[in-house]
Image (cartoon, rainbow over all chains, first blue to last red; front, side):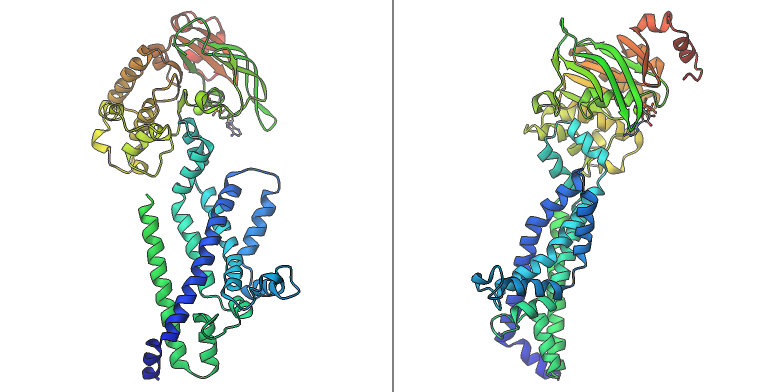
Length: 222
Length: 242
Ligand SMILES: Nc1ncnc2c1ncn2[C@@H]1O[C@H](COP(=O)(O)OP(=O)(O)OP(=O)(O)O)[C@@H](O)[C@H]1O
Ligand SMILES: [Mg+2]
């Protein structure tokens, strides 16, 4: 069993799977961060009617079951769906879309609470020292950097380990849309536990490496 | 806002509320350019609130504030906002070094670090702490960093909220000497303090706030030597007045 899995690890097919996992999850994370951080910061910093409702929606979004998101995206991209003409179903693009939707509320909601955790007095004092609105928002984000890192880490953890959505909208097609989680499901079903365990280890190592990188960024943002 | 004919500030018919509680009621107040106004009064009198209005951080519920004869616009344009700086009663430090906190205002203005930063650190006895984490300072150290941070941008108007409250006598003297230098530059200063002696030493005019209202405002010598209001006399005698 161990031999099998070692052999499998040297397999170019596995490299393909790892590479695709990284590409899909990485791209989804970048997009979700690029939208989620500004949205979360804006909601956290602003005072407006309906803020509690927006907060409620974001918090609920954090718990969206990936399969449900997968279902929505599936319907959206299916031939009769609103975005059917894109022909994204069963392509990596569909998987990126689904994972972005899963990651967005995590990034936005946790950014929001990180920003709200910064002493409001500090914001006032920064303004009194001559900061523009843009500058003071930027300062607040910098002060909240630990919470921001946590937001991105949580979103990354949520999507790299997610199987329901990528399975539904990607279809687990070998050499095309198969990622680590869906490969694990498949090899477990086929009774190939050695391979499944090996893939699981690779997944953990990937997560470890990515989180180490994010932590490094947090340290440097001082 | 150098000394001249127009007052730096003119307040008229000011009412400021939190919820339905009126915490500040000032019918008329002028703050002369280039002078120092001392504001004394018991805890909760509205002193810090007055400074927030003068800084433009809050808009009064009623009334108008003029700066150099012009109505204070909300939000204040950057050029105006940057002429006014506050040292807050409870200064909040950025999660950076002491030095970076002091340089902060200059950075916001896109200016390079200037020798003024080192000079201020030196004068306030902060040079040995320049690289220390500003969040880990003692109360008095924090207060001195906050003062240095405000002075580094060389404002036309300096609003000081209890700038010496946490300091030992030697540091009080240091801070007061620095404030005198700033006065000599022609900076308009509003000095809020519990400490009547401090107002007496530094202010040209002094004003007593009680429960949000101006009870007495006079040239400092007259304020302390011949107060006209019985409540001012009581306050100066150290009695609790409301
Ligand atoms: N943001 C706020 N919301 C509600 N009430 C406030 C707020 N800020 C101040 N107050 C109230 O307004 C009154 C005046 O407060 P202010 O801070 O101006 O007093 P102060 O004269 O500076 O007192 P101290 O000498 O204790 O600093 C107080 O009764 C305070 O409780
Ligand atoms: Mg106060």
